[in-house]
Image (cartoon, rainbow, N blue to C red; front, side):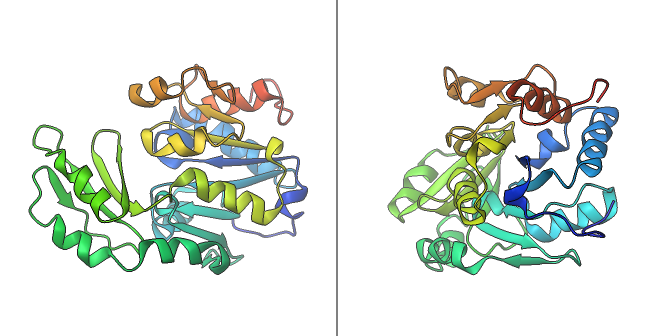
Length: 260
């Protein structure tokens, strides 16, 4: 699998675009399920666009594509929505400045202030990677002090707990949902041709954004509870990659041959 060996239609002109979380979603399910989805995408690149929407940083994502044979996305919404970037033909990442200006302004270079405020906060351990517009921690549920949430809000920022083990501090109003919508609007992709896919609470804003969405079968309980009665969300029975294929067929977004 490769980046762009042949010319492709503009992503807005394709029949369908998948905007998917990685861990537990695009990377979820059995090896056979993943291979079915990945092979189907590669065989239909002229009519299928691919955007990764993830908490992972772009460099890690590109490394996974190079080393694990994932289909290469055309665009990435990374860092829990704080990075919006294009994937260049050589596999490098190019942030889209016009879409990131507002994110940078909302963050206002508060990374150091956040790190100092939470240096000794119970139940939070700073992750070693430094991000441009977020600060991330590993969370220990048994030791976590919930006053962290009020401290973040007092700084004019947002917090997000995902999978009961990650704590992210984000610019106010910035997350996966607003960022994927801004990217889709920027690219001119019709909303009805998009499928958003996720499995944890950091996918919530994307799944309730009004775009066609799927919560794959292995989604965390807290997410499923929040998605109750939202009619734009399909609740897949299958896990991970197989759940994505199930939803594509259910929404009739693209032809899925039997056996795929």
